Amino acid sequence: MPIAPSFAATHDIDLALGSTEQFLARPDVDVVYVATPQSEHLAIGLAAIAAGKHVLIEKLITASADEAKSRARWRGAGVVRLRRGGTVW
Image (cartoon, rainbow, N blue to C red; front, side):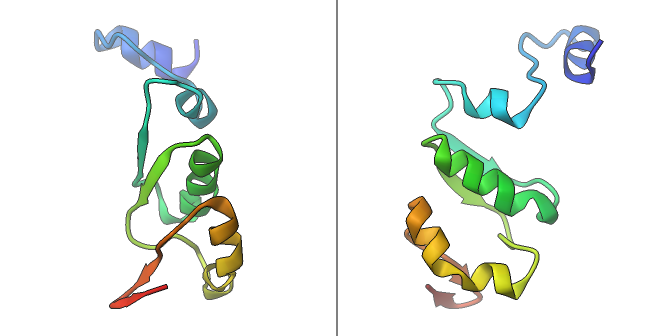
């Protein structure tokens, strides 16, 4: 049995999803707060944006400065604001 359904059954939880894709495909999800390990922020954030969700990413959005500098990629994905320290891009 996959981990999520097994955990849900053990703890009397009504809904268990086995993947980020299943979660992002739900029409009742409007906003995604990404608080995963930092190495996953970029991929999950962009996937959520592609799924039409509003996204708030905690702390660092990328693992490297080079990834963060490609702001055109962000604008193309619909990101309107990035903040680095006190600087808003």
